[in-house]
Length: 467
Image (cartoon, rainbow, N blue to C red; front, side, top):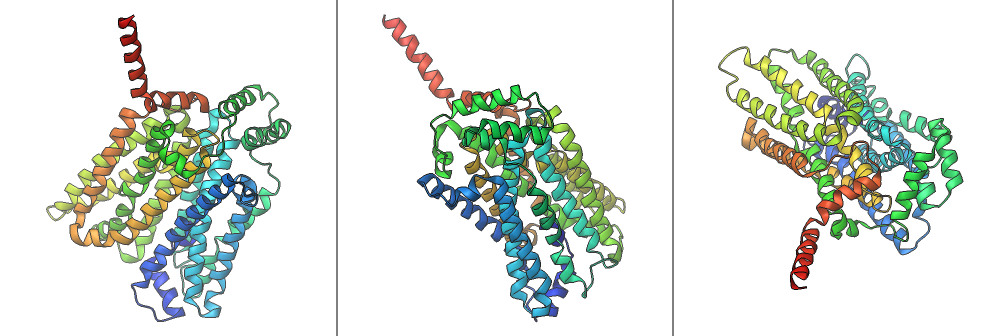
């Protein structure tokens, strides 16, 4: 939801701030960072709720485990943020804008985690990747919608900016109303609550199908595998050997979404467009083209994820991004040698965005639902969200200094991380396509307990020799 207001132009937001109060330009950094800080603090709040829930407190279970109610609460936060934005000009308060963006960040931080858990637990095995990827599709849709309505011919004017920043409240109201008719997540009902009948009714309502034998058997196996286990805390995920490789598989791609260089690319794109002779008043149309490219490729990825698999899409995606950005860095270094080179750079920018949309952008969001069983999943989403928001904040706050110091060679930092992520994913991570949660856990156990299995085998051979 934050993307509707996130993509208004830099010049427009400076106009907003100047019309409310005479601020220094440096406060723009705080304005941009407030959304990331809100998302990060939300992840820590989610962490605190989880710890209290595991200690026996009752109230946090309302928001931690009942995904539908958590989403309803989260939409109220977004509506409050929209109202703050809407009335900030009337109140002549720039603090309301900062608070509104902070609440938008909080809304996105909680919403992404809970929304993805709800989707993952409502999805059939064959469509799990596609349905969890719809979050990336609508994030892309939010970006391009913000870019379109932010142009001066629509709402990108000084008079319309309060409405532009408040428009994110509309999808919040729509989701709040429609969620009232949706059931609770079937896996939560079956595995956590033991409500077999309620889970079956929820599946029938969501899937419009009556043959649910295979899905119920899958949930029964997962419930049996976690029988007697308490909900795992973040500390458990970070320290337990049984999920060590799942944690690495989650952390490296999630950090890669921020450290793969896509934000650097957006930053440099306008300079490259300018060097190619694009007029300033036409620049935002190219930005819309970039947003549309990302949306189209993420949508295409949603149809490929359950066919090609997560491992290939992410691994080869990061590899191709690293190679393409290496070429882009070289071309930026020789951009003055010929007049056609800036046009090649524009093509390379669109190539990187296509690769990003086809792999890393969307697939990383589906990982916690694929990699962790029910008892571990909430903590996995806390870790995923924390990594994402910390990465966004660090890149947002430090990238300007990196560009100032390295120029176009700043891409080499992201190239190194992209190639490292690709090597890790392609060589070490098992494929999860078309597998049940229990089967995925068994695949990762071969990595988690690899040395122990080798030690056991060695011990058995030694004992046999002595006998």
